Image 1 (tube, rainbow, N blue to C red):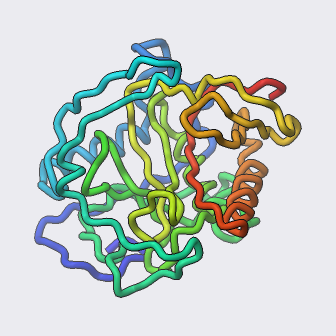
Image 2 (image 1 turned 90 degrees about the vertical axis):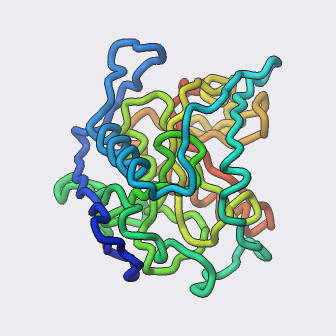
Image 3 (image 1 turned 60 degrees about the vertical axis):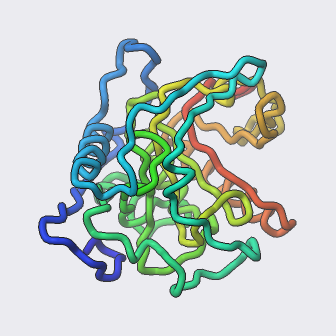
Length: 292
């Protein structure tokens, strides 16, 4: 089994996860453009993730076989991207009941230690001399390793989960190491549609076991270019209003700002939880806000 996982039922011939060691030289700092623009070739990370994901689909490790999804951009100022994914609605595992924003992890409920080992694609690990990696640094360092596992009820091609040591039994409350690891994963991708998301308890989280979602969506989103009202430009903090849901926007131009951004987002998440407000976090590339 992958590190941090309890022994699960392992079918003969289940594939093993690939060790993916990366450094800052692997970060794609200039995001690729849409429509085959220069620089849009997949990165080493994209190839490893998508090849592993397709392999697990061929092996039948998903709840359903995902084909092309009917997709359209709805008319109106929000340019909402709508997809029809009937099988996720009918075959997905029912969400767990959420009774509190600080609900503790319940080992009796389904959790990621019960995954089949073959569902894990990659073990992401920052190179020892990469700076910012490993668990011995500050609170905003990436974890020693992140497991990248398939979401067995996928939204889109390449839909995966990022899991920090499932065996620790951490509840679904955002931590700085997980967010830092997710931000670095975003920089490892050259695809403009690679996004990550965190659903908090009470905000569509279906499983109370710490994880991020990551997926590829072949459409630009309004949130990536919408005008933002500066709140604290020195900290990269703005307010998004003209989007489907008003949100705080935290922005950094590159890897040097990841530690501060991670710290600020986690402080905001903790404050929202203290006030009884559920929250989501969405990670994507986008235009710099005014004043950045």
